[in-house]
Amino acid sequence: MSITSKFNHIDLKSQPSGTTKPWTKVDAGGTSYNHEQVSRPVHNLRNEAPSEFNTDISGFGLFHWPSGEKDFVDDAAVRGPYYDDVVALLYDNCDALPSNVGTGKGGANNKVHKVVIFDHTIRRRQPDAPRGPVQQVHVDQTPAAAAARVRRHLPPNEAEELLRHRFQLINVWRPIGHPATDHPLAVIDWRSTVPEDFTPVDLLYPKRADSVMDDDDDDRGKEKLPDKTSERYSTEGYEARGETMGVLANENHRFYYVKDMTPEEVLLLKCYDSWGEGEPNGKKGLAVRTPHTAFEDPTTPKDAKPRESIEVRALVFYEE
Image (cartoon, rainbow, N blue to C red; front, side, top):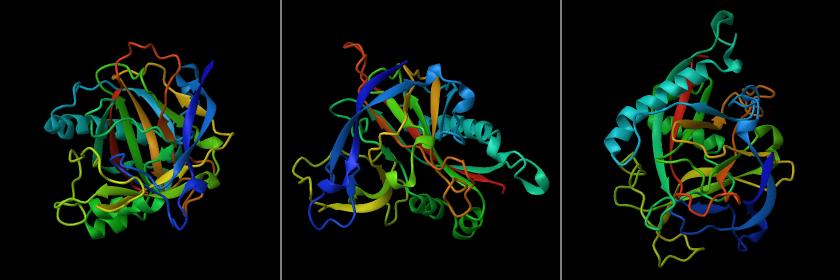
């Protein structure tokens, strides 16, 4: 059984004349494009066979993985115990992926070598929240941005060695405080996409005196509300510090969500896999990325609590 909802996709034809590459501001201060809105059926992942949905096959997977952290208001607790929870989850899940069976040295199973968490974002659908749910279908990083993350967060010699082996960029998504009934997260099954669906988009951040492009390599917890005086199509006061992927509308896309997803559950969303189909070391049939978006569920009760969630992004490196 499914519901039907509306989804926003990047519309490249809507950009001002002379725009060479689409861009979006991370603080919701504007974009260089408008959206194409389409209606699509959305299937409840709870009604599907779990064996058919993991980061290898579909690009995403649902797990029951309770955490001791509940409120996510203490930054030290998030970066400490909660990060430890995420690392343990990734080791447990990624070691067991079918794509790692027999692909290690001498025919052994490939194993996770290292996990590096590089950021997290807390989203609350509240007027005074720096980050709210994103209602546009997107992928968090392009292949180039994923490799740049490796080089940014690891020493040069180690980074180049790790890039010779399989690596992934995974988003670990969890509701906070109550079920994500309001504005839940939808994902697109990678098997229903084609390469032509994706287009690189520059991610613009407000310039700061302690910009991560200079001395400060940590942007976590420094989000601010957009400048009310900034013009939508102006990039003044902003700089490109990342690259995401916009997703064009395609009637073949198959959307899924987790009805009333609880804080005891997590979704693993694969943003990139160097073994994904189409990459230089890619393997046919292996998911490379997961398009996703917040959306309005028409069956949501009017008294549902506004959605709150945390997403932690991590680099996962393998032995081979």
